[in-house]
Length: 73
Image 1 (cartoon, one colour):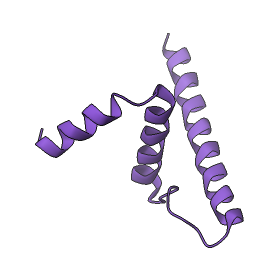
Image 2 (cartoon, one colour; image 1 turned 90 degrees about the horizontal axis):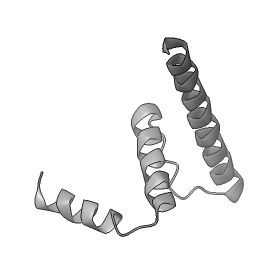
Image 3 (cartoon, helix red, strand yellow; image 1 turned 135 degrees about the horizontal axis):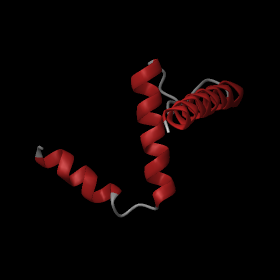
């Protein structure tokens, strides 16, 4: 791991868990779906729509994973 990554991890470790979780969810959403929900949009409506869509997709994916894990138990 390079020094820049170590510094980032050290800084994140000082953050509240909710900040870490939010950053993680944003990174996952961007990686999977190619849409950066942290960028500034032209209007607040566009921003709200992007965040709502990201939340809904993340929630749906989490419920599917949970259902699959319950089936395997």
